[in-house]
Amino acid sequence: MAPSKKQYCPQGHDTFAVGRSSGGTCKACSSASRINWVRENKLWAITYKGEFCKDCDFDFAGRPECAQFDHRDGRRGVPTGRTITQLARSRLKAELDLCDLVCANCHAIRTLARLQQLTQAQRAEYGRPGAQARWGKKG
Image (tube, rainbow, N blue to C red; front, side):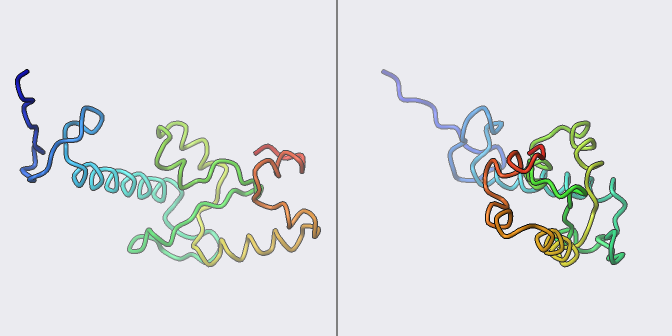
């Protein structure tokens, strides 16, 4: 049996390529590419929502990592962070239309205000799988 031909990363890294799904790049290049893609999608989403915190007018131009997307109705369905990385832009637009762009501080304040409106039993269930369905909300 002939020895298999070694494949190396096209970027010149001295590591083996990791297969077809990554385009034949090494693990480091594949990870870097994914990180860039997620960052570009988040920047696109911030631009789509207006680039400023809805509550305090914080400008996300220099600090996109502070931006968070808060569902107006308080539902906790698909986490928006995962949505940004997995959905096509057309479906992402539909999800973002249900959200407000807020900074991390304002998001924490909004979440606390929602939690204070819940009963003790509801607070204990908040965030558990299936809890939204039990409250009569879609999750």
